[in-house]
Image (cartoon, rainbow, N blue to C red):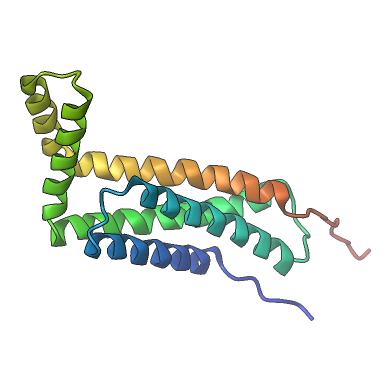
Length: 170
């Protein structure tokens, strides 16, 4: 009995939806400034990819190589990254106050460190506000792709590999 393989698109959409629900919950529960929640989201993302690669291995009876497992995991990471970028862009346009909250948090962080003058802080915040969306998209893109690549490597490394050669009838 041959088991059907769950497409990487489906897995990517499911992981993305879980991450979006967490992000919305943290926003509406006013827990945005909790940095530990960001780590929880990345942990869920990483575990989701590792689990997906492992499931893929089981579904194909482990008849694959490290490279194929990594490619499957990275496809999922790319799908999640694309969905999260679209989500973030829509979210910022629907809730523009998130930009103000981020700027206030950045100001407080810079002031608490005491390494910059008020003029330098004002300049830095002005630059950040001007390119806020670019920084947000770039950070999302890099963060998810880097963590996705790491998760794909781990998933491909721990998934059993038993590639069988193709038998050709002569």
